[in-house]
Amino acid sequence: MSASAAKVSKKELNSNHDGADETSEKEQQEAIEHIDEVQNEIDRLNEQASEEILKVEQKYNKLRQPFFQKRSELIAKIPNFWVTTFVNHPQVSALLGEEDEEALHYLSRVEVTEFEDIKSGYRIDFYFDENPYFENKVLSKEFHLNESGDPSSKSTEIKWKSGKDLTKRSSQTQNKAGRKRQHEEPESFFTWFTDHADAGADELGEVIKDDIWPNPLQYYLVPDMDDEEGEGEDDDEDEEGLEDIDEEGDEDGEEDEEDDGEDGEVWPLEVGIGKNLAI
Image (tube, rainbow, N blue to C red; front, top):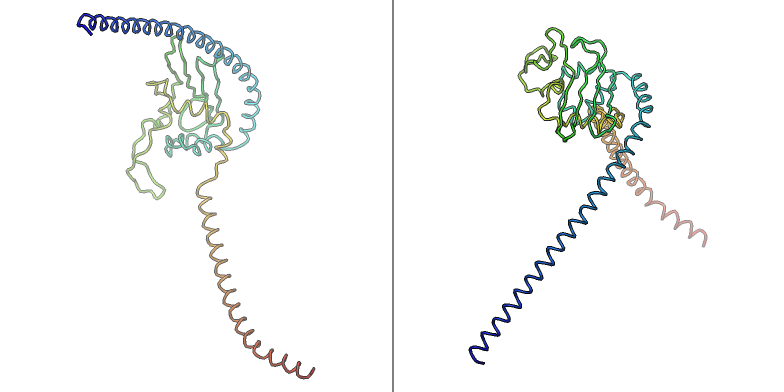
């Protein structure tokens, strides 16, 4: 093959390769445009689904209200229902100090209200009986989402009675024996009402709204661990007692077998005698 022919062949190959690249890029661009069109349709359906889901949630939220009201009336007949529920909840109990628990003994009712469009936020109301800690009958905290989706929160200002502000308590507490002990207590539960730093990530509010409020009875009925441990000890004692009885029974059984063995030595002779007599 001449040098000029080789050059022509090489040019043709390069030209074909460039043409293939141009075709491939064009196909890819068309595919991207079609994907974008399909994605727009998916997004449109997702928006439509969100609107339909919102309507369903609003409908059933209204249907649930009479049952929530009836439940609150029944809960009011059970002393210390809400403080027990909070103490039994693993996440909430971690936020409670001893004095918080004492104050929550005066908590008579809790209500969670989702705003009409649901997406814009909710409010939690805590109703208290007359108590030695603060003047308020109701403490509330609200969570809002504005049109741009930015979260915010606001709450009732707690009117503490003199010397009873639990958010300013000392880390030194008096134990039952009357001796002072230094220990780290969790930050007071009531500081939650003044904390608006990150309304979009308020774990306590979300836990109360989404976990406790739908079914508080499941946490109220959590068995007391001390009782369970006590029952476990009783069971262990019962098992030990049964083992002792079994051991005594085994010993008695061995003695009976020995007696039977001694008696058994005589029986063959008696049988033999009986057979000889029969013959």
